[in-house]
Image (cartoon, rainbow, N blue to C red; front, side, top):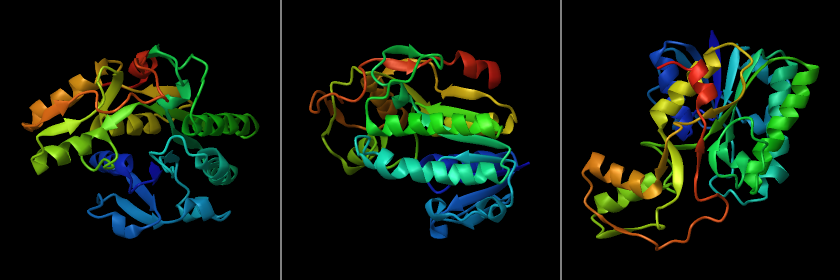
Length: 279
């Protein structure tokens, strides 16, 4: 099997490449900048390509892979930017349609838990999406566009809705690297929200394992949550990271307001995932 990975030099992409390498899967790592990909697995090669400007022969240029794991998305973490549907959405659809028209048999594209909008509690794939920020809206719209395309030109589709991931190499706009930097810098306190939000966290290594297993399944899985199914407060997660890494720093709770684009308590329902992905 041959697998192409877009967004290969990004946070999740690097973990996906490592997981594919661990399984010795022939891999094409798609990136705009080859300098960002070092120490590649022996089974992988780099394809330098700007997917937003890719030509009609891009599928052949990628070696006609059996499956594409599509992780690429620009404009994050500014979830409220109109860029997501004004610019990103049409470019994303054009690229994926080009691959599918050329004969791509299987696509795993990553969605987001923000597609569920302000719905609270355990979120299952059967819930209707209700995105309330531009990023979630654009992801949901892309999913719908691909489903319309699929009705005309059938292919296997896995729409993997990602919840919260953490790990080394995460963008410094995320709480984990910010906490690490503050602790290693020797700051007395770490400023954060009240920390009572309940979220669904996965280590990036585990998220990558799930993504790869879903992609290699070779079946039309449809929408699926990539989640732990275990609600944990942001404060408890931060305290766990402090303990695991022996970081000595106090928490200045309530310094920041809670985000207005997500509910206080939500996590993924992993029932469908557990039926497909084995430990």
